[in-house]
Length: 101
Image 1 (cartoon, rainbow, N blue to C red):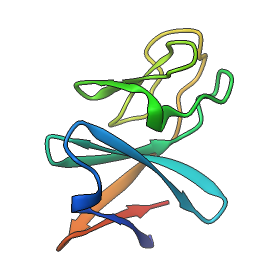
Image 2 (cartoon, rainbow, N blue to C red; image 1 turned 180 degrees about the vertical axis):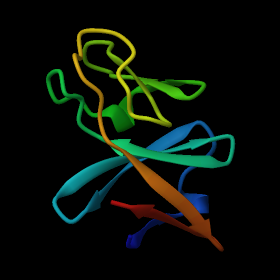
Image 3 (cartoon, helix red, strand yellow; image 1 turned 30 degrees about the vertical axis):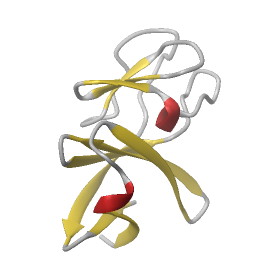
């Protein structure tokens, strides 16, 4: 397990998201009421950027075609996506937001 700093707490307001890059992977980082979640940024349906999707509780809706994903597990919740995305462990150390990819 290797956590990598990807942002600071102040960079992502509650209810917002940010795309971060770790190695060759794009990860969507979300702040839901001060709790951070990280999933793959790319929707498996047609590659939509999940970091630009609409948040509703612990779900994000892909901005391109409306597939929904659970931020805790990465599971897909409705078509057109036919599979989920990876979810990653997030920890906050001081003001640093770190993801384990």
